[in-house]
Length: 190
Image (cartoon, rainbow, N blue to C red; front, top):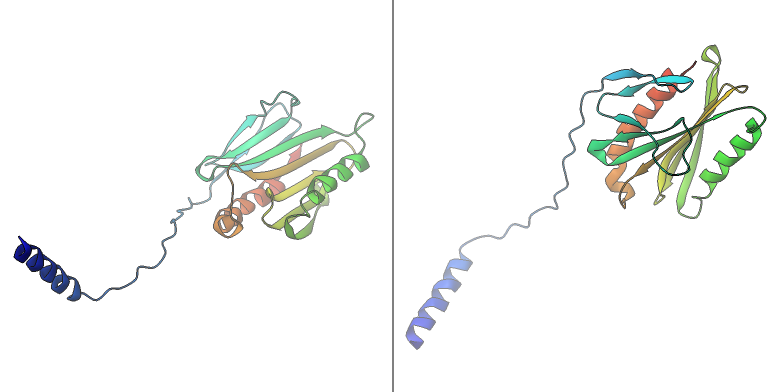
């Protein structure tokens, strides 16, 4: 019995010494992005825009939602763009709405490494606003508002429906950011 155990140990030792060990590199998920195709989204809300075919827009079903609060779900990437529409008038004035959006963005300064503001100005379509890019470990990486300055105000905030690592979501965030820029670029007030 001892001879058998010794023979097996020697055999295992010789077999293990015959191969060169090569460390394996860390693997990352491969993300296949679909080719961009867009369709016009229309609803009872006083605006329309182009959205990617791979997304779906649904009315916000939360308890305090208003009629033109929408969620654009990017299902393959577990992300949602929350769209909030407010009519400018006696109940909601433009300055208060802009300040609310800025306050929502600035709430992320604790975790944000940088907040980049890009001005949106399309005078022919009466679309003006700001696109905010938030870098770092923030809950949202992208927010915006657009308005015609007299009647309409639309705010958007992109959230991933999971805990995220900024480095891991960077390719998906860049891909979806292009879709949000397309939405803003094709927005028309009705």
